[in-house]
Image (cartoon, rainbow, N blue to C red):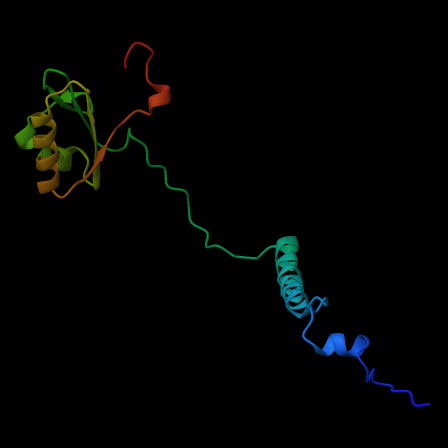
Length: 148
C-alpha cells in the first residue's frame, strides 16, 4: 500500500493548486504604518511634554498712544483739525513737523458722512510729506446703537 505525503491524488492538494481563493491577510503594510505612527507619536510626545525652550530678546516697553501722535480729524462739513486745533490742508505737513518733530505716522479720523474728496486730499498731502497714514475706524460690534 502506498501513501502520498503531498496529497498526490484528486483530494485537498489538487484543489489548492488549482488557483482557489487565498484567505490570508497581508499584515505587512499595516505593521509598517503602525510603526511609523508609533515613532511620530514618540517624537511629538517628548516635545509636547517639555516644550521647546526659546530665549527671546528683551526690549524696553514703548508707549505709543494716540495722544503722543498727531491725529487729523475731518468733520462732516469738511473742517480739518490737528489734535483739536484747526489747520489748513495745504499746511498740514509743515504743521505736523512743527508740533511733532519725531512723528513718522499720522492718524486720520473722518466722519463716515464726510465727502470723500476731502479725505483723499488730506491723505495725499500726508503722503507727499512722507508720513505713514493710519485710518481710525471703529469695530462694528462697538458702534453706537443709533447708527447703522
